[in-house]
Image 1 (cartoon, helix red, strand yellow):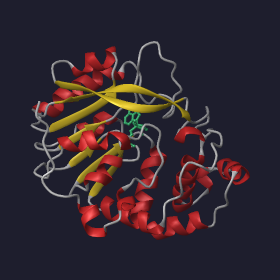
Image 2 (cartoon, helix red, strand yellow):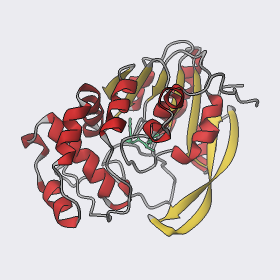
Image 3 (cartoon, protein in one colour):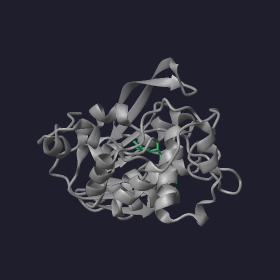
Image 4 (tube, protein in one colour):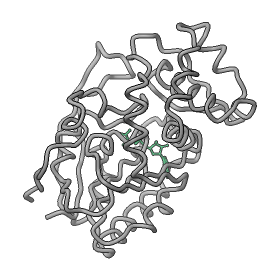
Length: 285
Ligand SMILES: C[S@@+](CC[C@H](N)C(=O)[O-])C[C@H]1O[C@@H](n2cnc3c(N)ncnc32)[C@H](O)[C@@H]1O
């Protein structure tokens, strides 16, 4: 396999000279920031849209700065948050600026009922809770209420107005949809680039439902495998990342595959790190 190289410098850095602007504004469990140097090699500016059906914080999208995108996720609060940042980054920032700091404020905000808030307040609450919750997880109780505990304040800063404004500008070129991944993949067109980063379902591993109940399970593996075939048949390009495991080998079939070492925190504690392998499968020759 000879991965495609960048053929132009990324616009975000060229325009602003500020690296932090290209960072995602959201802290999100499973973010692929550490894999960006590997993933970006598959991208070419000659491709059509950038499509990400499991978008999470969309860190690769913000880094690559494509001229058109289609971003989808099953998490409605996440997608609404992106829509609000795109529509009015200043309002979201003004709301965040009224927030306190520390555990007491975190739990007060967590207790608020999202349906009783405005869309801007919900977006700011989502950004705040995921920034300061344990491990950046998104988990809900039986009633669908966010229930991840406070994780401390050493998990980075809330986004600045500049970061939110920058994200809004980038998102203007993207369509955002709340959908199961197949709904997004059905809309793939010839020459699109599709990056798939699903939650990992691994036989025998303890699952923490880190993206909410009924989001991705064993039955979805065969749907994911069929989705790769569909993307290829459409004449589009795909890159899939998955934990290197038996399930990954089953999904990746006869596509081009490589293993990449990544350093992970054990159970969310940065002082305990281990090296694991990520599998990348692609139809890009
Ligand atoms: C590993 S995260 C993606 C992280 C993202 N690549 C990033 O860098 O931030 C997986 C995402 O898949 C979403 N998800 C889970 N099940 C899904 C499904 N069936 N269809 C679409 N999205 C799903 C979760 O809400 C989560 O945001």
